[in-house]
Amino acid sequence: MASKLVAPHGGKGLVCALLTGADRDAELKKAKGLKQVEISDRAKGDLIMMGIGGFSPLTGFMTKGDWKGVCENFAMTDGTFWPVPITLDVDKSEGINVGDEIALVKDGEIFATMQIEETFEMTADDKKWECEKVFMGEGEESVDGNFWKLAPEDHPGVIMVQAQKDMNIAGPVKVLSEGEYPAEYPGVYLTPAQTRSMFDERGWANVAALQLRNPMHRSHEFLAKIAVEVCDGVLIHSLIGNLKPGDIPAPVRVKAIDILIENYFVKENVINAGYPLDMRYAGPREGLLHATFRQNYGVNNMLIGRDHAGVGDFYGLFEAQDIFDRIPETGDDAKDLLCKPMKIDWTFYCTECDGMASLRTCPHDKESRVILSGTKLRKALSEGAEIVDHFGREEVLDHLKEYYAGLTEKVEVKMQGAASGDTM
Image (cartoon, rainbow, N blue to C red; front, top):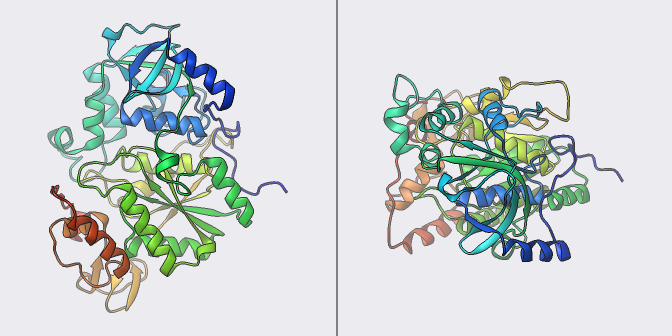
């Protein structure tokens, strides 16, 4: 029976650069004799996504033309939509030239080989331009000249780009490893081919994804259940790559989701899965990236709530929803983004409504509302503060309190306006 799921992005099916079996063995043997280039954690996650088809139709790291087009116009040079640059930086002093073949290594493990088709310099002005295009938002920390006062110290994505080396290299890759993810997250780390197969087995055609980098609180649960009501099923899809200091590690978050599903969901309607990227904290642009690669996983609805993928107060509360209305469309399904946003207003628990509600459904003032946010939860847990009623399910909170009790070093959590409810 033919699949009813949305087609992978780019019109070429799942484009997977991961080698297996004898092909992998031969390439790995060759890679050991190539120039070894150390890569970042971000690049490692990008490679794995190229390997498993999560970044279809990408076959490698972007050229200067693609980098510029993505930053400026949300599209690669061939017109295919893409929202965030996928680039690989190296030091010019390494002497990498067009025509070279190199091995990409992280912590002693060879992750891929790469054929160099282009090199291009990344000056300080180039990095600044990329940051302004990709990370600058409409929140109070981005406007009125605040962005460059605050971002170099407070925005993890900007810090990451500013720290990149002085040259980018472009070209196709052959991926040789999925890293630690299959062993550390069995049954949770799923490839696009696997999720598509699971959706097909369940007869799902209309699928929503909930993006998570925090443990699920009541708002997350509410969003997922809204989607369950109107879709065939929901993929609760957690980032299991690297986060910023103070965020909760993936194993703790994955177990928290399992606890919630076990006690408060109809299991047949939800799947708990993880994907191997590092967080970029690009707010609206990252929301678009989440939708783009979710399309490859077989998802056609991306849940977008308040301050999706945001950090601090760099972005407007619903900027990540609004950006979907501004992206280019060619009319060609092979080039356009087919995964659409499921826009949900600010959600909270209302004591007067006696249940979960949103700004669209609740007529009461904010004194009646329990403001729910991952940042607020992490701050309270890290400080040993009391968690207000209706913030999370008790079973989940007990699990998180146990994790925080075992920490020997605490990281201060900065409270943003939206998380505190001050901007409501």
